[in-house]
Length: 120
Image 1 (spheres, one colour):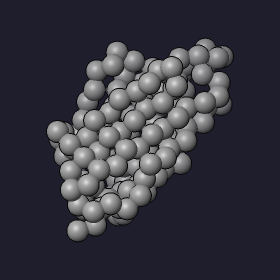
Image 2 (cartoon, helix red, strand yellow):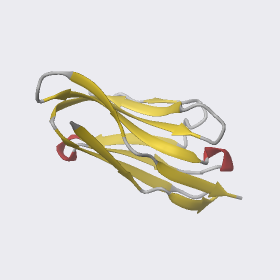
Image 3 (tube, helix red, strand yellow):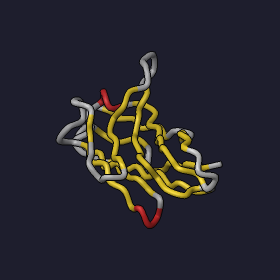
Image 4 (tube, one colour):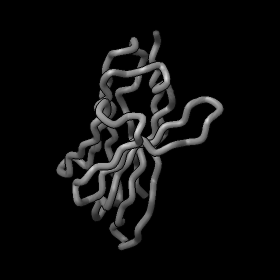
């Protein structure tokens, strides 16, 4: 079993910044990829950014140039630096990871989510 714990969400004014963290722990042999998703009220969950084991990054068009995803392999942690936040960024942000477990199985896990609210 792998646990993902997110932190760093909160309330911020438009134009401000937040940094989300997601720490993975448990039965981890290796981390194959990690990603951030978000879900706004009444909308489907959408991919915000991902970072495979290669270290390359991918972003949704709506956040390009404003958000940066990074990872610290030594700490099994992925970060999402969010700058120039807009009210439309308001959502619950979820961490997602694809792991090879100690049992040699590829499994995908989700964090519990952290609320980000951007006010005018």
